[in-house]
Length: 280
Length: 104
Image (cartoon, rainbow over the protein chains, first blue to last red):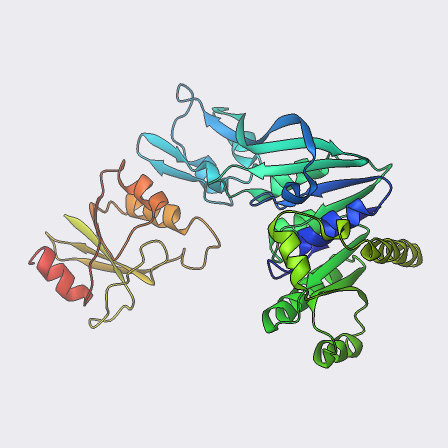
């Protein structure tokens, strides 16, 4: 069972939901796939016991063989090459590691080498196995690192993925192949607008979803009517409570001081188990 | 000398386009023959790599100097080793920029 936690808008509470949910389960894996700014560890405080470099394959040109024919520049769909009269310029940050240049170079002058883009950290806190990707500052290719983080998922246990915000490639890469997606939002115009975009994205990916309303106001008729009209399941409401914000500000998962939410998160998990069974 | 000015239009009144990689038109002028060529920028809508592609176009067109508003780091990494001079901060009409830079 893979449950991803995504949002559309940033800062709605993905990490809050992902960490608290993981802490309410008997045994779980928590994967921080927001590799540009991973922050689940601030709250989970796992003991990191393993670190692995994350790399991507990029071309390296052998100038003894290169005759500046320009095929690499022509076949690169991502414009990662520029051809000067006696020089081939390569822009590693634009490379998507598709391998076309090395495959199609008529001189066989291109070989692929590993280029580091970040790091994967693996740790443990009690019964939670924690895996996070850290993209090196200045690097732009989040999806390959997200895929590498996800390769550590052990299918024997529930995996919770803390996804990056937005609806672009990093979010899609993180959410793809999950059995259920929790979309976290807040009752603001931005929150609701970006929720709609996120819903359209997960629908296109064919992933069942439900919404967690964070910073919920009591008697917020407008969002309730919206969810009802669009038949959007609301799994949980987390109130706009100063105490929750204070705990967040000092890195404490709020279930540690609001034990009644333990049952609510467990109910949410049971609901997901039931609804995915129906979907399957 | 072959100059290229980035332009927002292809008419004599056109203003200099402040962007290099994603400009609307490349206005290429031969200061010796006075010959002009106006090219629509094929890279304007690229999702990525517009700077590199546009700089590559300058190389293949034999341009020796670029006049524009600003040039991104990737484009500059192609233009510099190719020996193409970069003049940024250019504003106003394209025709005026050409005259000020190099009276024909």
